[in-house]
Length: 487
Image (cartoon, rainbow, N blue to C red; front, side, top):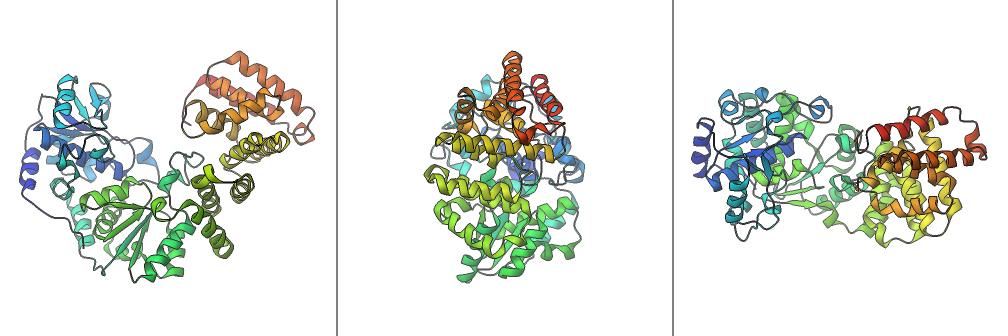
């Protein structure tokens, strides 16, 4: 069973807490996202500062993420002691310049020292493991667990109480901790994006993982943000809902997150998507995360998704249903035949018509396979869904323009849809207009909008939509005003 140990390096780390702020170059952890990623970066900074013999600092901004119900970010004073903050906290706004991110991916300590010497103020560590930047063969110390660093963090008494509560929970042999990431990448502002899909375990895959581990006699503890889904999975499979364990401890929201982190670290196996929270738990236990994408092959995910959705789909939130079908498609997309890909994408947007990404991929699929009429129909349906949502702009056009020209996660469908526009597709030219506006080409955007309006005047599905013209204008203007802006 994994435990959080206390070893001799702890004294060195604690001595750094007592050092006065240094005027020399420093190592900095500068994250503005969730708790797991912030703590990952902090521990990385502590480790690297120890290896290089310099001080470290960290930032703790209270921005959009802190206001999100999907994250457990509270002011630093509620998590860390005054002494720890006095020694190591630095204003986020004061660190925008002068700190270079570790170059990687194969640095040794000599190259890191050279980077530190060349940097104006110091080096910034990533939230991801240091082994993504520093060669673990050249510097084996970066692969050591972070138990000492975690123990050296100056946590407030209520956080320490949450840690001790998590350490006191009895765990059976072969315990498996399953972390189900949800939050803003499933229910919030990033839900239409694709680049974070690998962080989420879909309900059918989660159920399969629970059942398979339970069948071997393992105790399965389920961690995560979505109480409704976790409750359903645990009730129907016999897994343990961690929220039930910790509810008697009367913890704060951040205390609950730390409790989960430490308890997850104590499980013999941690199964999750590529989540910073799971990586943090594994790091303090000197273990690793068993990624769900490595445990079940993509073609098997499709079959178990079909089976589970037929048996249990009505128990899941529409957002979960949409993601389950989307993940089944996306994980196997390069090896799917046309019919199967179209089927999975159709199931996805049928489950949740408010998420436009599956429609965009389906339209591209039709165009790529020489079926322009079907592609046009899908894009028209996407526009109708945008209007039905009652917003001021066209969500599918914004999504296409942002995530293709910026190269996030839709670059692969760019040529199919713009190629259809080049070939005279009426709906596709509107999506190309958004793309042109994203590129600040107002004249090309205006020509494409005019072409689309000529098409729309002849399409009975669109002629009755009085609000469509205003939504088009606002959409294009939004991209022209703020190209590249992540809404």
